[in-house]
Image (cartoon, rainbow, N blue to C red; front, side, top):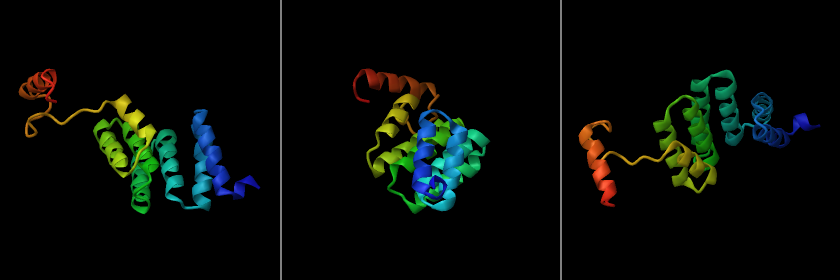
Length: 147
């Protein structure tokens, strides 16, 4: 019976995500996480909860708990970063993506970073990024090839 096998439910949830069927994926990940409390399952459940139910705080909390349980799984960082992007928090997402890449390689994280944009820190760190001095100094340094 497929309903009793958490791995089969997880795979079915991934297939649903590939087809952009978030509600179906949510149901599969809920069942899989209920049967087997693996951090990877929890992170995908959190991603679906954020997308379908709008419970972003709960989703972030679930992902952070999953990272504590399995800190070297880059997919969990990917899912947490996606949740931050759904919330409109690109800085947090970039930070999480970078942390994930420091734990191992993940092509999906690299693609997400390319889409979000990978900004360097401002030249003068104690000034805001929008400060004209930072803005123009950054442009000059980039043109000189020093940045």
